[in-house]
Amino acid sequence: MAQLTLQFKDLALKEFELTGQSMTMGREPDNDIVVENLLVSGYHARIDPAGSEYILTDLQSKNGTFVNGDRVTSTKLKDGDYILVGKHTIIFTLSPEEMQEDQKLTEQTMFIEVAQGASELEAQDPTPLGFDSTAVSAERRAVLSFLSGGGDEYEIKKKLVKLGKGEEADVPIGGLFTPKVAATISRRPTGYHLTPTGRAKVKVNDAEVGHSHRLREFDTIEIGPAKLQFYYQG
Image 1 (cartoon, rainbow, N blue to C red):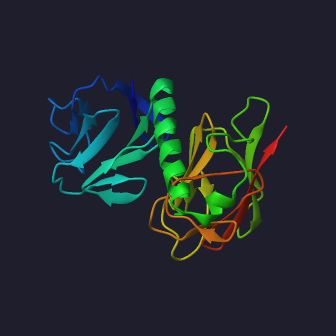
Image 2 (cartoon, one colour):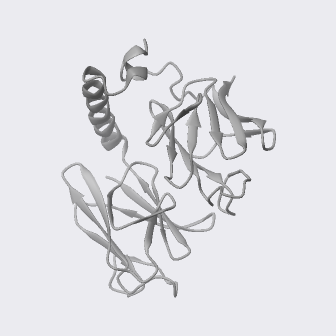
C-alpha cells in the first residue's frame, strides 16, 4: 500500500497508509491526517484512489495545496512527490509492488511515444526500455558534483532530494529567479529520476526537460546559474 509521511521541516511526525479509501487532510480533528497549523484550512485537501493511481484534490483551501512546489487543483501523485500544506510537508511513497506496476505503465507509455516518433532522442537511445545500467546499487553511491555555480559535491543518501534556493532544499542553488525548490531527484528501483517543479528551466545534457527524466551516469544538469554532473562512486 502507498504511504504518506507527515513532516515538519526535516522531522517526520507520523506515517499513514492509503488503504483504498479516500483520505482528507486539514486542521479539523475528524480529518484522516490532522495538520495543526493556522495556515491549513479545516478541510484542506483529499487523496482518492483511482484504480492503481492516486489523485490529490485541493478542497478550495485558503492558502492552497502545492506538489513539488507548484500550486495544484487536482493532480495524479507520483512516487516521491512532496505535498505542501501550510508549513507541513507530506511525502507520497508507493509500495514496492505499486512501484513495479507504475514502472510497467511508464515503460508502456515510453514505448508508444518512441514508436510514434514523439521523442527522437529516446528513439535513438540504444539502451533497452525498462533497463538502466546505472540502476540503484548498494555498492554504488550517487553523487552530484558542481561543475559551476555552487559548492563541491553532494552525496545522494535520501530517497527524495530537493534542489533550489529555499531553506528546505538539500542542494542549495543560487540565482535571482531560482525557486525555493526547482527540481527533485528521487531514488527508484530502476535508478534516479530528475523531476522539474515547473517553476524553473531545467536542462539535462543541454536539452530542456519538463517531466520526470531518468538520469544516466555523467549526465549534466543545469538549473539557473548552476551546472552539476551526476555520477556514481564505488
